[in-house]
Length: 169
Image 1 (cartoon, rainbow, N blue to C red):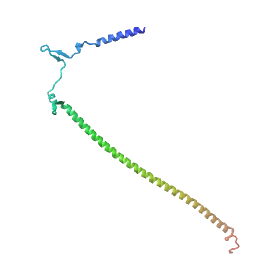
Image 2 (tube, rainbow, N blue to C red):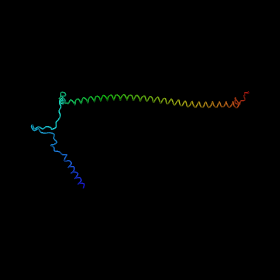
Image 3 (cartoon, rainbow, N blue to C red):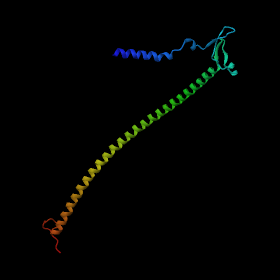
Image 4 (cartoon, rainbow, N blue to C red):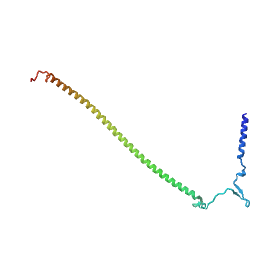
């Protein structure tokens, strides 16, 4: 069964290929001139008057180059030079940007150092303020106890601490 399917597929492929094959004679693009017997092309190439100026001699060696190719080479060289100049200016801009970034980084480090010093001084000042606050609270508490003691003595009638000394009115 499989061999029959394979054989029929091969036959169908060959049948489909037959119209694609052309005789070799129809593929040639030349024809034979009947008077001179020369082989000539059946395809015609358009020629313009200005095409004669496209060729010129180059240097002593006699090498030929089309002037349009020379112009194309000159324009490519000019574009390459312009690209090189743009690249150089971009590299200079990148270099100056890198220098500015380095300067900014140095400034940032200096600012961070200054902030570190200020934070240290601020913590010292905060510690001193806390210590002074505690000392002030102790002083106020002692003064308050002294004032209460004097007030108690005055209220109890003994200004001199019951020492036996008194003032009579």
